[in-house]
Length: 125
Image (cartoon, rainbow, N blue to C red):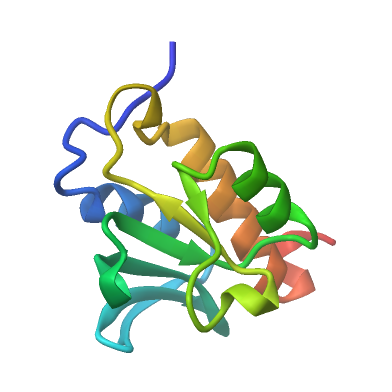
């Protein structure tokens, strides 16, 4: 059984908990939205940002992941404005039914984003 978010209309507390569980992460407002940093930004909350119809987040992603996930499920993943050309991934948080956010999957995506920007001493890479 997957752990779906209990309230897709307010996913910010859930996303915040996941991000802040990682070593040395801080939260700041960046470009008007809550964002999480480990030296550099790795996740930014996007509540209907730039006309996007969903509550989502944007995150750093390993090479090729953005293209793969967007092609696989364009209702849940997208190429975000401004940072999409750098491989960042957009992830819908307010989906319902089959499109509902899964906590385990979101935790994995956020952790991968963290690993893209965190110093090696924190990732063990």
